[in-house]
Length: 243
Ligand SMILES: [Zn+2]
Image (cartoon, rainbow, N blue to C red; front, side, top):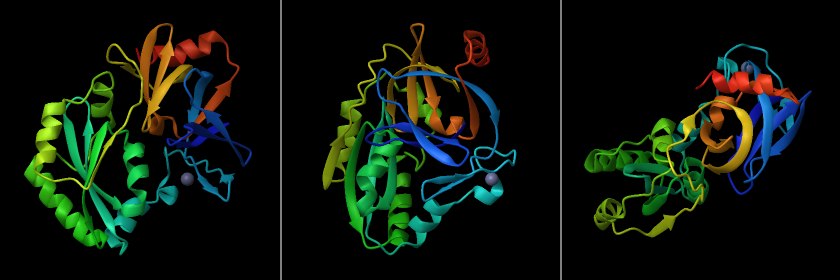
């Protein structure tokens, strides 16, 4: 059984493939996960609900299965695009663009705490130009690393700074997202699939194990073979590797 994808929206789940069949391992709060990680290799492809395995050693994807579709389609798309600002606790701000109809999904995928839709433009090319201008003006990049998001996982957004930023843009709409992770301190970064689910925030999975909170980037699980029903020793070994 291999981790071949993840779904971070309404019902967060890991997508697991066994002999071509894809199943969902829910990641809702309170779910107990008890997998140890085995070998990691290319996650292959999913087409029409079936998984095509790939044994190449590169992970999460080998060159053949790496599809830079998001970059290409945004850049060349003639659909209307939204330009948005997003805030990640406590004070990381970014500008981004997405096709207008994908705005809500895009903000959730990223695990933004706050966001504002600031412009709508006719195509992806114009959107990229304005994105670059805004990035330079607000001194906040176009990419926020997952490690940065994890560092602020137990924090809240600094309202004053965020509101000051919005004052310059007269937003079309603003968004506030609640993840209710209830973390008292910064979680330990790990690549594990064992523990009690606290919640998800974008592609970050928060797990509790023996009173310690762990943060897992779901992308880091892509491609791993999962070993089910393993004894405590195997689970502990995969935890020890990151402590
Ligand atoms: Zn491959």
